Amino acid sequence: MSKVVSAQEAISTYLKPGDMIAIGGFVTNRRPYGLVREIIKQRIGNLYIEGGPSGGEIDMLIGAGLVTAINISYIANSGFSQVCRRFRNAIEKEHSLLFEDYSLDVQTIAYHGAALGLSYMPVKNMLGTDLERKWGISEEERKKHPKLPAKKFVIQEDPFDPGSKLCLVPTPKIDVALVHAQVASPDGTCRINGPQFQDMDIAMAAKHTIISADRIVSDDEIRHNPELNTLTGLVVDAVVPMAFGCHPSQCFGVHDMDPRFFIKYEQVSKSGEAFDAFIKEYVDDVADHNEYLDKWGASNLLNLRVQEGVGYVPGLKRK
Image (cartoon, rainbow, N blue to C red; front, side, top):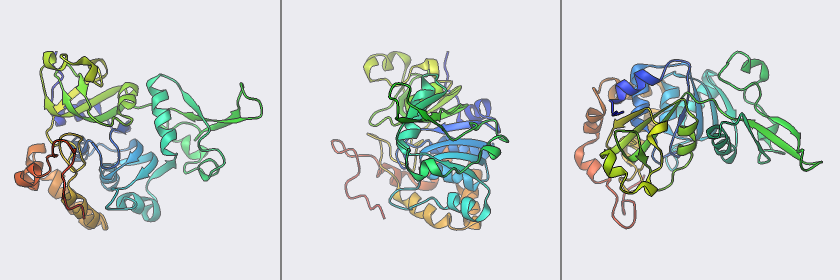
C-alpha cells in the first residue's frame, strides 16, 4: 500500500497538539523545513521539541508560539547567527519557553537509547560541568508536563566500577519524527545519502515517522541496491514528495544551502513584527510547497544544485 500523501495530510493525520516531536538533520543540513512550515500553517501548538543540533526551522516554530518546551544542545543558523533570535527572545524577554540543556553527544546517545526501547542511557559526558549543576526545568515544573521526564538525569555509582559515577539520562518518548531524505519509495523505504546524523534513531524511536523526499522512486527500484537504504518502510507512516523539501538548508548530493534565505531570516527574526510578516508571506499566504519554491525563483534554486565531484556549489556567496 502506498504511503505517499501531501504534507497537509501527513501533518494533520499524525501530529496533534501537545505531542513531542524530533527533527532530523543537523543545524543547516537536511532539515525538514517543508514539513515544519506545514505545522506552522496548521498552527499545531503546545509542542515538546527534541532539538539536538537545532536550526532555524525550530526557531520558526518557537516564534510562531507553538513550542512549550525544548530539550536542546544548540540552536543557530551557523554562519549567519550565533543563537537563533526567536529562541533567544522567548528565553530572555518573554520567558515563554521551557528549555533544558544537554550536550550534543549526550542527546544523540539518548536518541539511540530511545530507538533501542530503553528508558535511560548511562553517560559520563556532562559530569563535573554546568550541564550537571544547572537545570533549566525544575523537578516541580516537570510535574506539570507529562511529556517531560521527572528529572533531567539521575547520578548514581557505577555498579561495575565502584567509586565511579554515572549520569543516567532519560530517553525521549517521541510521538512524531520528521526526516528529509534524498530518495524514498511509496512503501516508506528511504535512502539518506551522506551524513545521517540522528535521523535513523529518532525515526525508529518515534510512534510515527513522516519522511519528505526530494525524489520518489518505485518500490522495485529502491530495492535494487538495498545496502544503500537507510530506513525500512516498517517505521515510516507517511512519505511526502517534496523536491527542495529541506530548503534553505543543504542536502548532500542534491543542493547547497540558500544564503538568501538565511540572510533574510537573520534580519526579520530580530523583531516580532517582522517575523510575523515573514511567516505570513512565506507560510500562511502560500498554497503549498511548490508555491513556496516559486517565491525563491527557479533560477536561484537551479543555481543551488551541487557540482558533481565536490558536493557543494563552488563560489556560492554565503554572506
